[in-house]
Amino acid sequence: MDLILIRHARAFDRDAAAWPDDARRPLTAAGREEFRRLAKRLGRIVPGVELVESSGFVRAWQTAQILAEQTGWPRPSRLERLEGGESAGGGETSSGDNIESLVRALAGMRGIDAVAWVGHEPMLSRLASRLLTGRADGMAIDFKKGAAVALRLGRDDRCELLWMVTPRVAARMRRSAK
Image (cartoon, rainbow, N blue to C red; front, top):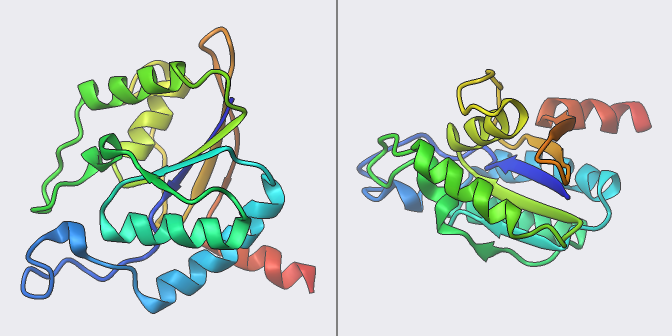
């Protein structure tokens, strides 16, 4: 199975006055546009994804909706466990237990060819590290906002890094295609 991990696109800065509940903080207009370009590229790189799941936080949900619009992938469904990388109050709530629950969820999806998960940092980089090295702190991954990482999970619990695309790389791909 291929797992595409996507960090939400650029959102407004934390502002307790504007968004007392940080889970409601949305994407910026520039973040939406930047991610639309990246999503179009993703649709060409991975034409078929069977399942898209997202954190319910507004910025991640908006990113997942753009993904569905631009790629033709399925509409997102909410996966609360992807909200573990951030809390509504802005504090980090990620734990090894939450990462392990995501790993177990993947084990139950073995019949699916490709899944996309949209979420937050540090959850996504820690999950990718866990899948690649066996430890959530086994490697550092600079997971930019709006970036996507593709992993291939083998039947023998081994995992392979396929690629990473950032918004900057997607913009360069666009310019070189002209």
